Image (cartoon, rainbow, N blue to C red):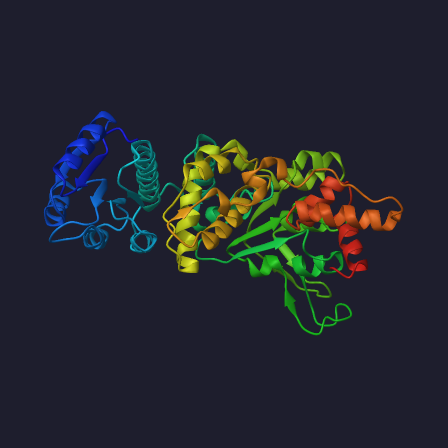
Length: 453
């Protein structure tokens, strides 16, 4: 229950029933007012503003169903519990269609009534909590497009703000799905370069034979298929910001050329003779520890030190679980708008399940789970049943073990392992390569051989 007493309005034309309910409800800790008929109940509801209404159905002047319609038109979220001695399935169905919280018959089962009231009270508390979260979001519970007020994120926000005032190179580290590109975009938006372009390339997503052209550009005829002139990412990002994502997956042969371009501030297209000066702030990102990449020979040490003037380390979602409720409400608002739904809040049980989950895919995974839940809810509440089975029942989470049948060939076993790892990483080839101890180029070639590139 909330810190103040939950206000209940009892509407019944039988004095004895009013007296019994008033006494019981006060004993259970509720604040109670009573009305002798529907008309008085409607008037009292306006002045008293009850949290919950318990109303008889058959009353003179204004019936319980008519009172229900009137109350719902004024406050559709207010729980209304209907009571009657003339219960019927048809009447119950009609009452529920019109928005009744529940429907009980006389003689009353008081333990059942108390359970209904306590459930309605929990709903009220959840709605109030999510209204507070919505209010926080309206006021800006985060930084830029980031959502979260936890200590780790506040430290990230302060660093982003400090970095936006300079042109220093930055490496952003963090697991897949934590928002590395969002850090880069936020730094760009807050910087003096905000009117310039923001260009992002992903070294793990570009085939190696096209990487040099993407970075440096090319002239017509520079290689087979170069039918026109193409500007590279440094030219495209001139006077703006360039994000080089998954920098540790860049082919080693290109890293010295990249370092030279960064040092000189000039770039020459493939097949060209003219050098172009550029003014670009470079932000690199990686989902692995860049020092480990240097030690493993994946990232040149001199390039690492050229890029790593500052480091922004994004915490995984499991280390900022205090932000989950706020993120959930943020995504509810986003997907209500996208899918024209009217989800209002999440049941307490579902929130606890979301907080207990490990979130290997971080905020990106939470966003996907919430979109699924909003679509399935089709009403005011997200229930545990609207969450994926592996969140509701952690024991049903996809196994970390790969079980292969006897007789499978080594090639098929390798294919299954690669595909299962890609599934686990959300098709992030760089992360899959890291987990498998392979190069991204190897992963890409394998997929091509499977006809899946």
